[in-house]
Length: 201
Image 1: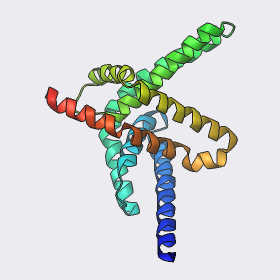
Image 2 (image 1 turned 30 degrees about the vertical axis):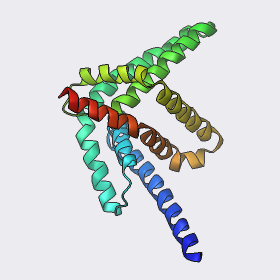
Image 3 (image 1 turned 45 degrees about the horizontal axis):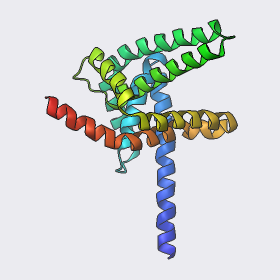
């Protein structure tokens, strides 16, 4: 029994270590890209790493993270610039319609739509496809997976709430936990997408 307890404890510690490490890697690689140019490729790398189940050494984790980061750097940033401009313009509309509640709800809905498009773009990113093609696919996926959308939005809102009430915890775990949950939810969708891509080819 003691062996089982120790094994379970070791597994928990290992998972916590991975989450904290991925958060640190995400933060460091985002900074390496000057935040704006590092945010999208680093988030892609985090989602890819969150899908992995095998345990690696620290050096191997860093090498794999860097590999994913470099792989996605150019095209995710091309798409990211457009997405950020769209979010900025939508955010400006919140101030323009600050006295019109209905319009504010419409603008917020559009912002969540853009966030979901970003998420699907990163989840299904493929360097062999054009950015425009993947924009279209990300928009299509938003409407194809309403159940996943609800779960993703819940995770994002939950992460924001946690960051407000426990900023210390959020610094070390909020992004990595959210990425892990999103990656876990997206596994079945990702497999369906991969099968569909193979059929199309």
